[in-house]
Length: 108
Image (tube, rainbow, N blue to C red; front, side, top):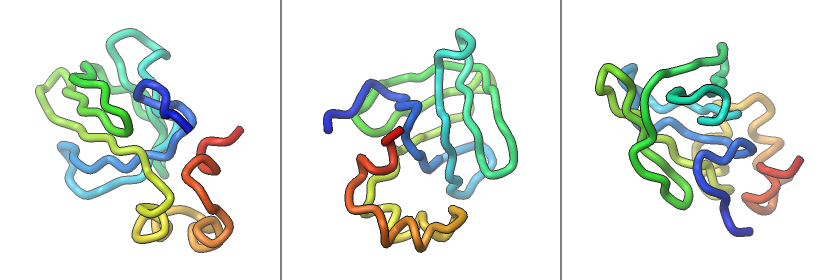
């Protein structure tokens, strides 16, 4: 499957870099809800962060907020999910065993 322009609203993402440190799993990432904002849901709540996507990669993108903090979002692929991300997702072990491809994460 050819990936859509980032952010992919159906994908599961890992925030590799943020001003708050530590990797974090997020979903429903979009820059289309409100101009000049990046919106996403983590395991606690939703976020709207003002700033700008600096580059649109095939499976990742950097975002700089208005305080000049760097956020790096990487789309989770099946191998990454199985190796480490499954631990941070409810029923992650079951999902890791039942999914065969990355596309299964983005199916409706």
